[in-house]
Length: 150
Image 1 (cartoon, helix red, strand yellow):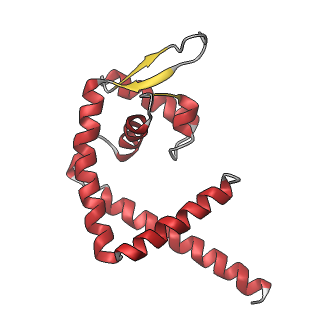
Image 2 (image 1 turned 135 degrees about the horizontal axis):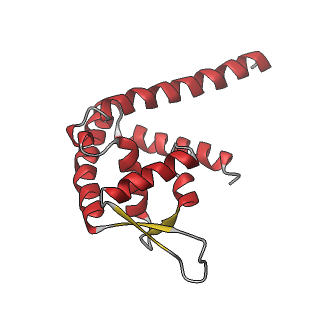
């Protein structure tokens, strides 16, 4: 394959991946549950729910969501004002701030999450077989690992 054809294949593959993600996200954002909690807010709550300790620093949240640091800070302020997350100072680090779910935040994340998972399942199983989903999982994992240096 020529260098030009290789570049074109890489670009076309990336564009296809990106456009399919955009199409899926647009469809998923139609969920009625996202009227109570935006998809980006849900993403923050979801990341907190998956953390083994229940607490993350802002920069750790930033590593897993598609928002800028200032946007995450403002969102955290809004989620805290709604009583969905809480802050605490970590032991031995008076300048640091940890973010965790409140009981109300955990309950809302679970409620929205159940509907979200159901919708994802419906969209994915119409388009892909189980084997294709496993292949997609493997390929996207390889892409993430190559970017992360692993």
